[in-house]
Amino acid sequence: MKGIHFEDLTVGQSADLTRVVTAADIESFAEVSGDTNPVHLDAEYAKTTTFQERIAHGMLSAAYISAVLGTRLPGPGAIYLNQSLRFRRPVRIGDAVTARVTVQTLDERRGHVTLATVCLVDGKTVVDGEAVVMVPRRSA
Image (cartoon, rainbow, N blue to C red; front, side, top):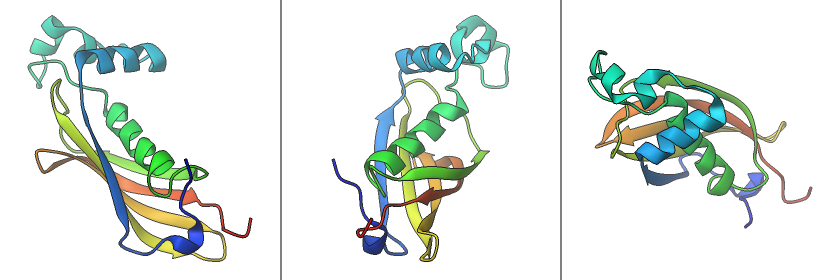
């Protein structure tokens, strides 16, 4: 698997991936992260919240953004430097989350790329933000 070199990136270039969130995904994320908030894991508890049902961890959607950056655009070799996130709507079990990244700016001197990041469910934004990554150059 090869990533895209800095020299081959252009403003407006984008990539995405879509994953359907399952109960097993949420449970696995809770196990790995240690975030066992009952709104994610306990249906009876979740019924007492604003959401009325279990919801996915916001950082699970953020992990899908990371997956796009690390595997598609820029891809292998990219190093995460910064990520801002705004959590807009809950993600529920069975939702198809599309994570998309779009090149906004290229810092030639530093080899850094700033990308708009967004996760969508049914065309509605559930998470958005901005990422900065360091990208290998062809000559490196």
